[in-house]
Image 1 (cartoon, one colour):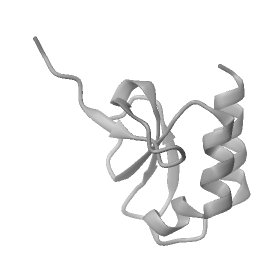
Image 2 (spheres, helix red, strand yellow):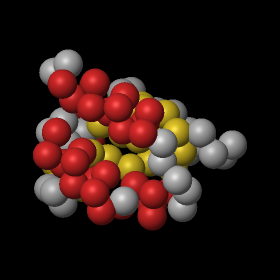
Image 3 (spheres, helix red, strand yellow):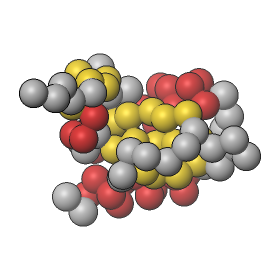
Length: 86
């Protein structure tokens, strides 16, 4: 039986299977992408598909600290759209 990789949500610190999260990736050129496949190259961060986790992430600027760069409102709006589409 294959073990599923575990990840932790940056908003609520809940641990779960990697497939249960939205992956946010910063590639080598410094661009931020949403990665639904979990296979894009670069530094990844994970968040639950919960709007409360997104709001906490934005308020605490945790994503900016992890990626060591300013995160635009466009990225947060894209995340919000993905979460609300669920």
